[in-house]
Length: 134
Image 1: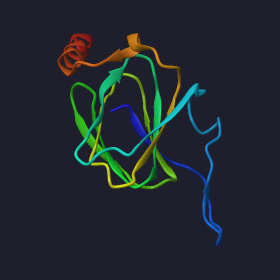
Image 2: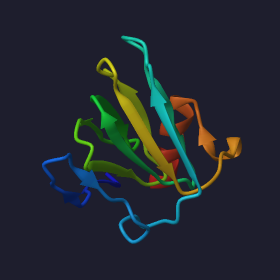
Image 3: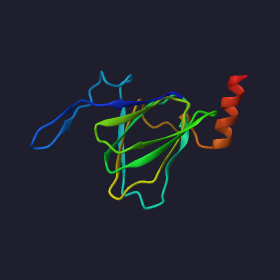
Image 4: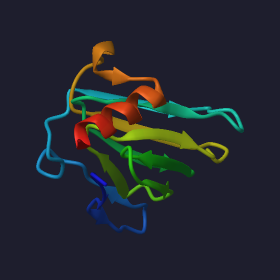
């Protein structure tokens, strides 16, 4: 599956830790940054795939699960460390679930929002993956 957990540099200090995200850590130049917060208990985010966009997700605070599907295999990764992020390449269906109270998900994206880059129907996503495999 075309995803990767990336550990960010962490500078320990008695006054508090500091993690760094610089342009050479990610395989793309980021053009959009946004964050999810105040997600109600039981709510889910995501529920789509991207044709070209790459994303890097970090649990800045709290935790949440990222359910991933490449059309053939499934995987769930829990993000709960502010110095660890999940790199998701194009063609991966993602659903964000089980947000803890106070969780904040930072998303760093390789491009600006373009609706035509999204696949929002899971059946369409799976069919396109299986068709590509033939």
